Amino acid sequence: MTSLNMMTKALLRVAAAVLLLVLPVAVQAGAGLERLDGFFKNNLAVLADFQQTLVDENNRELKQMHGTLILQRPGKFRWDYAVPHRQLIIADGKKFWLYDADLEQVTVRAMDATLGATPAVLLSGDLPLQESFVITELGVRGGEEWQGLEWVGLTPKADDAGFIRVWLGFDEKELRAMELTDNFGQTTLIRFSNVRREASVDATLFTFSPPPGVDVIGDGALDRGVTRNK
Image 1 (cartoon, rainbow, N blue to C red):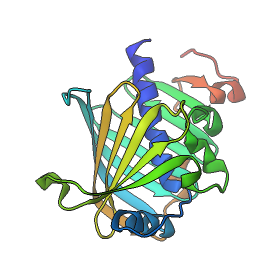
Image 2 (tube, rainbow, N blue to C red):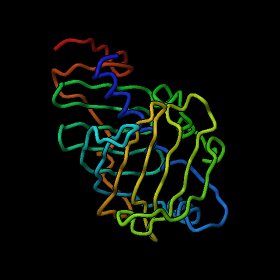
Image 3 (tube, rainbow, N blue to C red):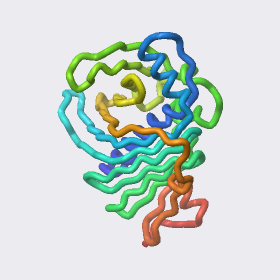
């Protein structure tokens, strides 16, 4: 597998995890679970800055990225990486667009095809989150960096989810952290800052048209009659 394919798959796993945040959920009482429930019941758009760090099974840092996130239910988000490389992931409710500006390449897939191996495919329906995940109250984790966040664990019931767990950390108002551990033992740590809510955001932020001259790979290329040429 090439490093490009590995990076694309890694970014799509993160995108799939983000889609968990637009799925319905129903949970019972408990500090973390109450905050999870409150997050899902708030229908306002979520905007945030993020720092994303990839670490291996020995907790060695492999890569760090920074950017912004816009999340709008149902089923739309814009995951914009600014540092160190310009990359953009957009979910428009039907398709994923992954644009790498440095490589001049776009990967596009139907949402159900991209998430076929993950429970996030339930985005297209109305099934609650607990249909595909075991939801666990984890409580407050130690360490100054966590600042008393209440954590909830999501363990996929399916064997082919592509990741073994997702942890979500909440303060009293918002989601502040996400940890995604894949089947290879690597963990993606995401810290959210400057989190705010808005009644609506510009709908064009969730649309994407490949720039002229870029390679377009996947479903979009077939739909548009685009081949791999410049």
